[in-house]
Amino acid sequence: MISREQSAALKGFLICLVVLGHNVFFSDVFQTSCWVWLYSFHVAGFFILPFFYPERELTWQRTKKNAKRLLWPYTYMFVSLFLVNYFIRKEATLDWGLVNTYLTGNQYTLKDYTGFQYLWFLPPMFSMLVIKEAYSLRRKALNRFLLAAGGLCFIVAWVFFFIAPYRISINVTLARYSILSFMLGLAMFFLGHVTSRIASKWTVSKWLCAGILALSLLLMYLTYDESPFYGMVHWISRAVCPIAGFCLLLRWDGYNLPIFRKLGELSLPIYLFHQPVNFVTGILFSRLGLPPVVSLPVSFVTVLLVSYFIAKLLTANRIANKFLFAKS
Image (tube, rainbow, N blue to C red; front, side):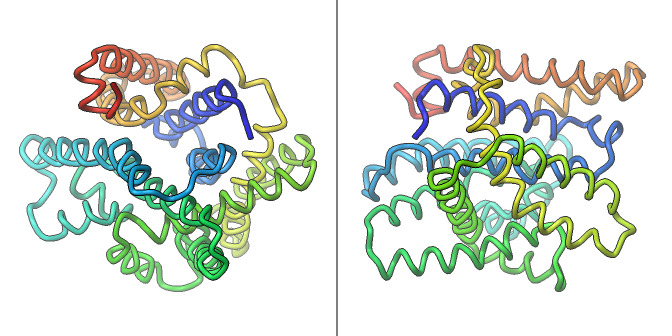
């Protein structure tokens, strides 16, 4: 188990990595493989974190609470971004694919309708929490099924998400029929369960974890795109980096700073608003004509600060906090 303070600091550190990875200038400064490497563990950390909280069994009250906390923000952000994309940017279409994308949180089609892909995170987080709490009921047959199904989904929906040893259209089809990204929720349940077992049973050195992450980045950078080994390196990194990254954070206390705790307390509101802020900031900084190596750090800090203050203003207002984030 981890303390509330450590949890907030972890969320704050992870949300910084997410905002950095989504920065429009990131790919101008770093090779795409660096983004893929970062993506392999920064968001995964949020899925793993609940497995280090006290266990809670599945109840209707718990499910309603999680729906209000995750699916309600997903709904109003989805609708808002779609309306902007449809009426102002004129890049979305009004068809049945819109309904399917909303119901599934389909990563492959979200951007077509909302202009952004980042909302994919919320439906599988909800599904994963439901699965995790169902597992806590300790029904042997159910638990065996959840672990087996989770392991299979982890390979298909997570490890093979970007690159697969089969036609990627199979993943796209599966995503269309996975309500609330339940398949990805199973995958993240398996990842969180395995990570918590490893962390609790073995004393994993932080230097070993750091070495795994560094070696993964180096191999992805060296083999990117043209090497026949890139697919294998990519798959291994997607499987191993989330575990190594999270175990490193558990063993390393350097992130447990007041600034990260402050950000972590508002990690969900920051996540909800950082991409629209990032989009506007990207346009403004592009017009300034600054080199990407300058625009990246300055725009990163700008997006983080603006998103934080928007989150702070909304959560400070009792009515807005209750309506938007289901908190009194």
